Length: 135
Ligand code: HEC
Image (cartoon, rainbow, N blue to C red):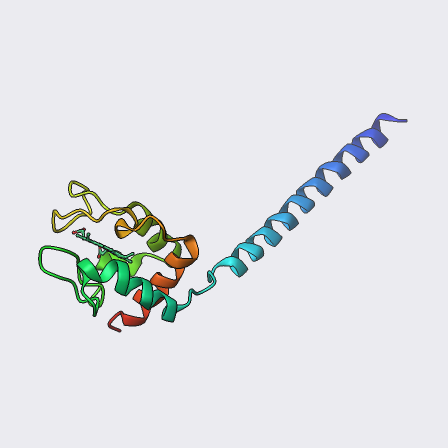
């Protein structure tokens, strides 16, 4: 094989690689877009969970209780910025009293103190919280 031919083949390989890489990136970006809206939970089931686990501190109407839990109807700026996945992650770990995000100094226990809640339960309870949010 002549040197020129080898160079040509090498150049071709580089171009094929770059085109292929760019194409794969575009496909990945499109896939990521499609995954954006997470499957919405079942708000009716979430309401049941809220009443049995969360209402203790956040009140049966979700409007919060002085000295216990925050208002989840008139939501904080922080809460409005969280997507469903972020809220689920938050509920799982709760928030310590010393956490910089904590505005009341009162801790929220992981899972609101109910470790039996599953990921699906949390998705449902988040759907419920969204439904009571003041628009
Ligand atoms: C033992 C009391 C308690 C229970 C039970 C409880 N929470 Fe909380 N929760 C709190 C407290 C206290 C805060 C606020 C901490 C702070 O000041 O940042 C809070 C904060 C939150 C926030 C963030 C609000 C914000 O604006 O920062 C969400 C969302 C939330 N709770 C959801 C839930 C859900 C859903 C449940 C039921 C699975 C639940 N909580 C159960 C006490 C509780």
